[in-house]
Image 1 (tube, helix red, strand yellow):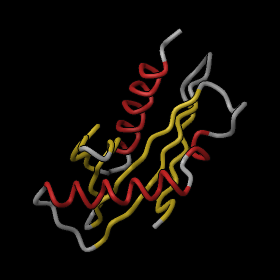
Image 2: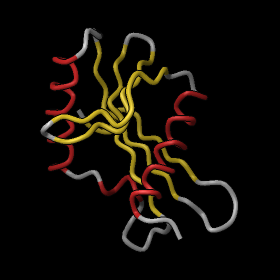
Image 3: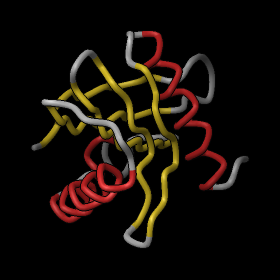
Image 4: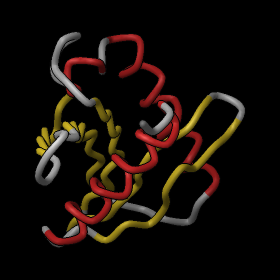
Amino acid sequence: MPTTSELGAHGERIAAAYLTDRGLRVLDRNWRCRDGELDIVAREGQALVFCEVKTRRAVGFGHPVEAVGRVKQRRLRTLAQRWLAAHEEHAPDLRFDVVGVLVQPVGPAVVTHLRAAFS
């Protein structure tokens, strides 16, 4: 059985492949600063997309996307500003997405992508 961090890394790989398959271009993964970490930063057309990935094995504690509450949203907004300050990427639109990955015991993972999950 994988550790929590291994499960998270697996979910992030699945999410990155899912987003790429749908036309997003991944610019950064697991970007860190003193305030935390951004899982995925991508570009879709003119929009910069800051994507939080949550992975779970079961829904006993709720669906993975439910784990992104107000405190996490506030932290992600701060991290996005830090990322923008550290990079030369510019975009007229910024978007915050959440990708939930439910790893099944048998079969492929179930991916839920909430576009513009919060602002």
